[in-house]
Length: 349
Ligand code: TXA
Ligand code: MG
Image (cartoon, rainbow, N blue to C red; front, side):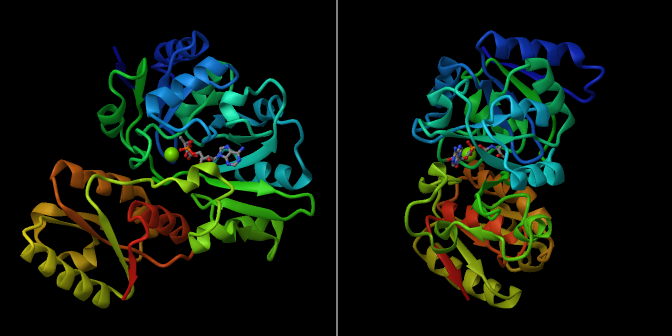
């Protein structure tokens, strides 16, 4: 039985947050909102609790979990060493959508790290998440609250669709405002930083803190080839039921290419869905369309991306044609997720 609770005010709803914290300490699972996506949380220092998350998500157990903490002090309790560069990043971006890989202390179980000797830590910038983590009093292992392979949930309704009956409590805190997951970075001894997964904290934001030329991006993210350093990045991911084709280019070219492809698919008797900006929308049928916002508004695209992809499951389309974006700023995270949801079917037009 899953208890679904709506929280609007962390002060007024203190009792519920206390109860949620108790569930974690008693070995249960609580789904909670963050600024990026909803997380499915359990006691990150208990191996059985970590395993229960893998079971609920149907997730391969070599894919390590992120431990979520309410503040820097809690991070120091599980990280064996915090380098000066890592400390700079903590000071600049916590709380916020930045996950940092640290050497782990022995209190962190293998079940949380997939056997790695490092641990991923993140401190969400969200008042409900903060109050919940404080109430739990232990680091909460919290991957995104989707069944493995599906788009991550950014609303409690989407969580319930995947997780009702599989977790003890779902805290509904409304939509997540960033909408794509945190940036994951690794810090090196020579003070350089590698982005393992692009996310809410962008490359230019990182460069501003650690210096230009000191941040690189895991080659896997750029080329789609080789073995990614974040194990979770190797799986097909963020995928709605129907296949996805992504188009990038000028509004005009993208619209033309999508129209052409839609004609062909329709001729084959297929129902086509369109994930488009307001500028592109006019050309397409409204019943299977999700408009994410203005063409140049990457924050809106990020915030709407997963809800958009999941919308097409509800209207049962056979193929989704999606308008992408360039890879500047937040565009790197957006296109990383779109490429994965499209299984690589991205067309520059
Ligand atoms: O925004 C977020 O980070 C969300 C919210 C819920 O906090 N969480 C999230 O977790 O996206 P998840 O489990 O869906 O993604 C965790 C990623 C995986 O790709 C995993 O491989 C990587 O983090 N990861 C975890 N520990 C790692 C480690 N020690 N070294 C390298 N990658 C690691
Ligand atoms: Mg995930």
